[in-house]
Image (cartoon, rainbow, N blue to C red; front, top):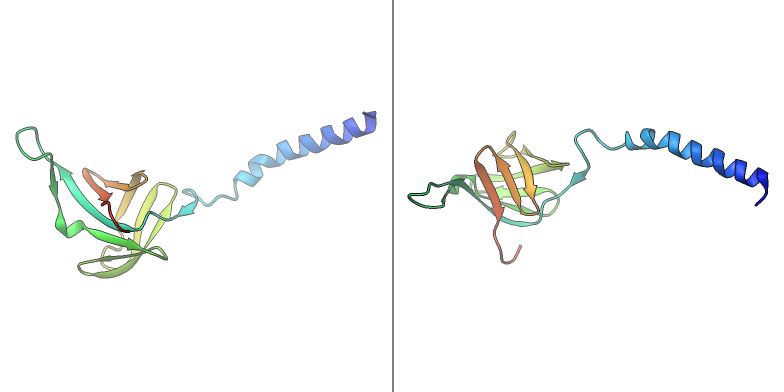
Length: 120
């Protein structure tokens, strides 16, 4: 390979390496936007060794559908998933924030919401 081509390729590689941190800054603060799998999410608190393994909290249950929307017993709304932070942005659960802990699970404090099996 001719010397000038080696020099040009080396300069190009150095420019790409220098620009990589700048390109990474284009990702939104908090992580990439995404959605959760559609379906009904049942929420529960941990039980104890002497009783039930968990206690279902029926009032916290919700159903995720298309276009980042949700429905619960009190109405409809919108959610936002940025990185691992899941936030209800409109509707009856507005302002509630969870952390995504698995493909089908969200957690807030001790409360864990898990997508139920079956049809989404």
